Amino acid sequence: MASPSPPTTTTQQACAACAHQGASSCPPNCGLAPYFPADKPKRFWYARLMFGMERILGFSEAEKQGIRPNGSTVISMAAVVYLADARVEDPILGAYGRIRKLQQQLDRLKAERARHSPAPSGNGKPSPS
Image (tube, one colour):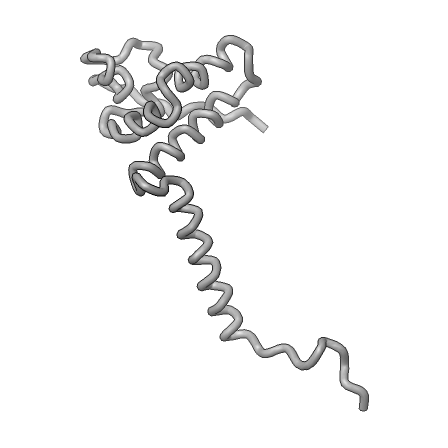
């Protein structure tokens, strides 16, 4: 299986990470631009708040330095982006809020399935004739 590759973007303006540092455009080798596009400044803000700039840069550079196996940068940054997007969506509960909503949806679906399924007869053993 081929290792995942980061999304590619060509940006004229600075990504949210570079803009945070006051740059008007990204350097050609900006490793954060695919994950923090200019139109998602809140994603970067929450990621920086939760992980700190040093750790985010560490996640994005670990593979290049041989610290982590191929593809791990994409996976690490996908987790950072997921958690940051969850905070944008729900600043109080974040990813827990997403999980809670999914659990509630699952509970509703199970209840609906139980209403539409035939009731089990007895203890599951055939009745003696």
